[in-house]
Image: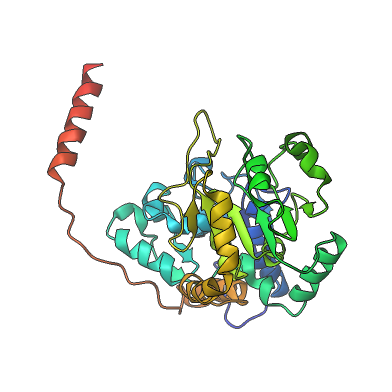
Length: 365
């Protein structure tokens, strides 16, 4: 059993982290710091992609459609990616009510959850708790700055202005448009695709690949280290736009860049954080030149946003394991839950009319 006083025999020492990301990548990045902290305290922390598996303590971060059942005596859920925290209706669509505990990164996400906490699908049985974003804990380690410097040196990144392109998914010549907009204006141009992205940048960028200022980073490179190397990050609506404030990197979204998931493209919209600078394909070059000139003016806002969005900077994973140990020892967390907003639901006349018409059409089929 884990070390610690009065650990209940109701639970084993195993914590199962349910994820499709057994080979690494963005999903495992969410769990890895928590797994490391659990193991350091004597827990048998394991990964599983068997979503029908029974567990005494189960930790989940996949989307609802991936998980047919939640078969854990104590079930904990968090975000698949930090950009999920921007979506107000996320908690209902992902049915957080099927879990015991929901974990949020900070104040901003808590306010969004509160705004929909009246909905029965949004509320886990024990409640939701502000714990921080464990994926970012290593930013505050003694080794992080040295790691960033070493990575930059190894890749030939010089001192001077640095811009990063990190899309949700490369498509529609976005990388080429990015290069055309930034070439000649920045000392260092970084491109990092996601772990799942197999786009051929050599073919896409052509002669741009001969530019000594361009550095193509490994898809598997730690995103926090990558962001810390850059002054500005350009994306569509990826999680990097939110995580950028942790490294005080200015986030920019190109709102008419398509994201090719599924049969039809989507575009950045309601899932953009309020602090991301929005521009378009035609205005990208001009916008980046203006941002570069005024970069210092953005830093104070980024620091303020960091405090609003992320609690327990550098110690989120220990906070999570503390919460789990409270459940083992006391039956529930000692941390105060986010208060639920109690609102009497009133049916909207137009919505009722739409739903009724839809029901009639289904019955007529």
